[in-house]
Length: 321
Image (cartoon, rainbow, N blue to C red; front, side, top):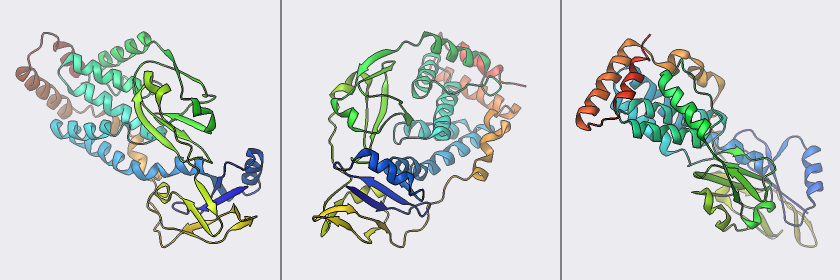
């Protein structure tokens, strides 16, 4: 049997949701022959754009404050970004922003141990992100590369019900073929279990605790044609109402529903992201910014003297053109 929901939040598309009694092949064939509809897993990935708007605003303001020499304000914006690292299943561009914010924080601090910790957090969040020595000071980039070389992975057992889900995301990245074990360094991660049948579940946990996660198999849609039931919170406050039901022996066969008077959510269009491709925006290597950063770190050093604080000052100077 097949249950259908229409969400219509972004693209006027139907979201097709399967049930525990539906043959998986029937569900795949249904989507193949109905290209105007998408799976719930696809829907989940698309709605993450709703949460990304604030992230890009923090990035833009942080860089502007950095260039203007208002480094305390810049730190605050980058801190707000890293605070959101595990708050959503970020896509590629969003992961780039979070990774960049950790690196900027590593650059802004005058304490070498704190800087190293931020570099490690950037690596743990997404080790596949590239670090450009034309954007960040070469000594800082070298430290990051050293951490990557020293990185060691372990094998962690996954929860028993993992195989029931279509996708597993680690910090927003899809883990292909992941069912029983995960090979990753010991760290804190956001893990999300996605399915076209069951309600998605997310956890922020240490990797050695993965096997102990309690996963509930709650169907996305259940009940009878006269009184169907689904979790409306999954549709991010979109107003959902049933249109019709296809039934067989009183059980749900198809249940489309759609948003009622819901305004379209603004997406992150390519034109809005042009500043991300600007070398000037990313690098921020003006004399003003460099001088302000050096002054800021000298003030930090006076307030918190440390015998290991000199390396970060060298990093600042190497940023000067």
